[in-house]
Length: 473
Ligand SMILES: Nc1ncnc2c1ncn2[C@@H]1O[C@H](COP(=O)(O)OP(=O)(O)OP(=O)(O)O)[C@@H](O)[C@H]1O
Image (tube, rainbow, N blue to C red; front, side):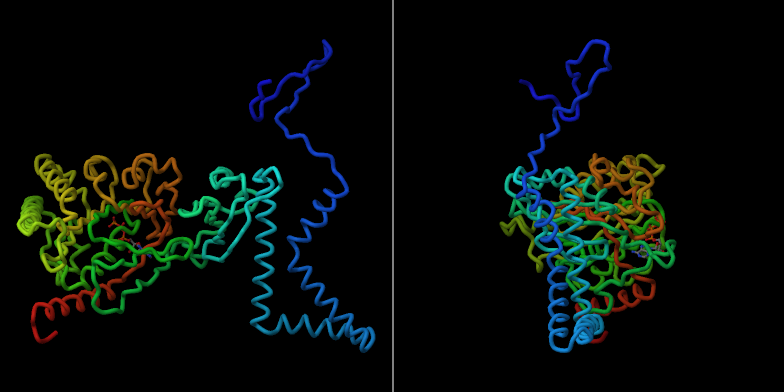
């Protein structure tokens, strides 16, 4: 007999003239309720889920009974009151009690959500919470799926689980080493929304703001994700593309990379700034700065390509494939407002710039030349696919459309749920950061104000003078 499709209905044979009877043959037949299963269903399972609360109640009752036995009913009342008020008044016990109660409530809600989402196995097991921690956006759980189930099934029902839990979203990511473990993010709120004034995006200070010398080879802290975890970025051997609508926070994000480069005195910065004011503050630590002059931009690009070829010749003559730190400095090439150069009205100049940029981005990584390209118009005429696909790191701030989002994040990303046009316009600096080998993460960049930038630039310039051999700073 062929099994009808899930959710379909068939007409049962009935008497002629009666309305058709719809059946749901796909519904599982319930087992008969025995005394044992009733006890399990209505007593054992709820008691297990309430076990911590029941244990606390049992202790309270035991203390009250002890008091009653010793001093009568007044003694019982006083003993129970003393225990309850001690737990409530001592901060340590109060926090612990609240935490235990919250965890218990989370487990009960999770249990109910999994059962409503039909995530039970044939022997009535559901994915179990092994660890839980509270994060700014809600809860992060480590969940183990029971035998016979897969993490994929939990992922497929994430939306249903979220609806039962009454939260914004439930995200499921399988553990790389264990197929039965999954990280589940229960997103209850937007941690980047400012509850005091939703129109103001509260800046998060950059952890390296007050520090001394740094290396661009180290992981650079750039953002905090919505689970409260810091996101770092390794720039060496990579390129990065930043895109988003005006005022979305691209220049602020780019300034973090510039700040890290400024604090590394061995690093050279060759900047392209079509708006003239975005990189102007960094001029003291820059080797070259091109503004809105396409001819100069092209000749600087050509110089960079010459430098790249010189580095490859050096490697060839030394019989090596990898450039050592002492061979040549890292060059950071920030471009603020890519559109001005790649989609310039002088089509010939724009084509020339594009071909140089593609060559530099394609071959520059091993020669330690890092391109950091920012654009406020993420469209294919501004960011040619031939250029975008060579860039490993993508950072999409709020975009106007799904297409614009896909131009930065990659084709099809928006329909897979990674859509920068979903980001709230008011939460400036929030975006999706897509690093190689991982899924894009929603995050908010750290922020440097003008005074902090001035301070970092002064320190960077002093470090450069010191490295160049000047005895004074
Ligand atoms: N991470 C952040 N935290 C807090 N505020 C931010 C953040 N990033 C940006 N902002 C706010 O948004 C404003 C615009 O940021 P920014 O200049 O970086 O945007 P942009 O995308 O480069 O804009 P444009 O394309 O017009 O140059 C900043 O002046 C700042 O007030």
